[in-house]
Structures are given as C-alpha cells and as structure tokens.
Length: 168
Image 1 (cartoon, rainbow, N blue to C red):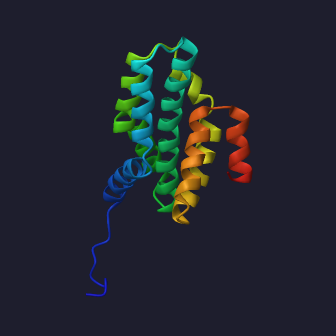
Image 2: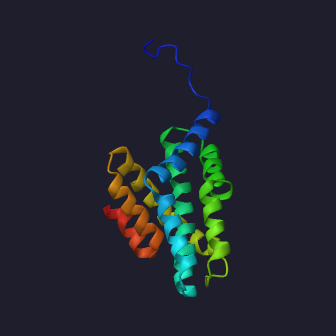
C-alpha cells in the first residue's frame, strides 16, 4: 500500500537491475545508435586504418565507461565490492555493448594490435568519468552526460582526466 510490505531486493536482484539499467541508459542516450551510425559510415566509405582505429578504440572506451557506470551504481547501492566487480566484468565480457564493440572490431580496419589492452590503460580515468556521467544522469543533465561519453569515446587521456576533475 505505502511500500511498507515491499520486498527488499537481494544483492543478486540489485546487480541484475543495475546491469539492465546501465544498458538501458546507453540506449536512452542514443549511444548505441551513435555507434551504429559511425559503424555504418565506416562500412560504406573508404576509411583509413587510423580512422578505423579511432572508431574501434571509441567502442572499447564506451564499454569501459559502461563498466565504470555499473561499478558506480553498485557502490551507490552499497553492494559488496565483489558484486560491483562482477557487474562491471559482465559489461566487459557478456553484454550488448561488448557485442557491438566486437562487431565493430571485426569489420573495420584498425591499427592497434590489442585494443582491449590499450584502453585498459585508460580505465582509471574512464571509471572516474563514469562517476561524473552517473552524477549528471541523476541530476537529469542527459545532454551533458552524452558529452561526457563523447569525450571519453574520442580518447585523449588528458581530456578524460580533465573532465573528471572539472566537469564537461
């Protein structure tokens, strides 16, 4: 009636909810749509390996930003660190953003030998940007959150660190 008898979610249910919420956020902000558009453009035009590399790395950075967002949401929900880590790992290893990233990687020429390793070096700033991303979403500042994603996808390690310290 007034929520008095509402069943409290288990940690597993919360983890599943956070996982779905992160992917829903990427959908609502049209981030998946943006990546699909860029992928389609890459496939229909002659892009250089460097341009392909930018797209592939941007997809990987998006995946890491999503994992960071999942971790941030799990920590905000006071979930155990192991659960937060498992949600982030699920985003990185078994999610729609992972599938999109692998599809882009397999169909676009790129220069990086191993993009996952290259982007993993940026994980700290990307996870920091995820904290800002989450904060902006909670405040209803969706356009600014999209700009954070856009800057993260472009890379520029120093720029990512800068936005986490000063905002967009």
